[in-house]
Image 1: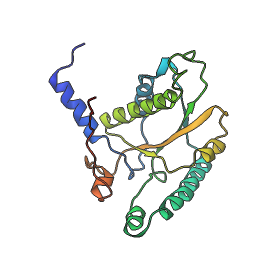
Image 2: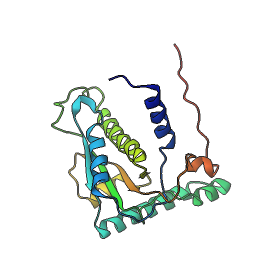
Image 3: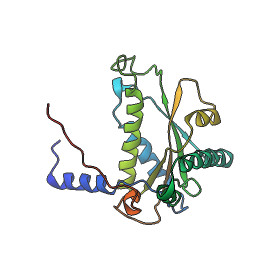
Image 4: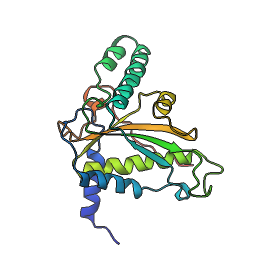
Length: 207
């Protein structure tokens, strides 16, 4: 299939408007949207076709509360690592949408999957984690195309998350995703908007 300029323009718009969302409406997502997000992960590339991502749909109020408590502890430690104006700027950031987002996913990487039979990862086992990251990004882009927001919470202690969900020893925590309808639409990243840091341009070095 050959894609046209119009298709490329749409892809660029989706890439530009794909933003971490922290402010959600509480409206539930319908099952069709959830199915589309799941199918997007199915379409993601992975090393050796290992499909190492493992996804837990977090609906239990107790698990959600425990996740928020882990975030609060880690967020406090992160805040205390800054000084002066940068500490004040950090405190002003909203870094999670765990209180409101209707759909929340805890995502892990299976580090010893039977799938793939070891192809492509013997010399670079980290490609399993990279594969999980690509599945998350596939979900994010599809969500944006469906006018759904996704926030990736990374201020979490991986070991605490693995203990919270009592996962197998071969699972390593990747991310907690908050998913729902965003309160506002904005193509300016939050960290740009609050003056934390602008993008640095990608440089391709020639050697």
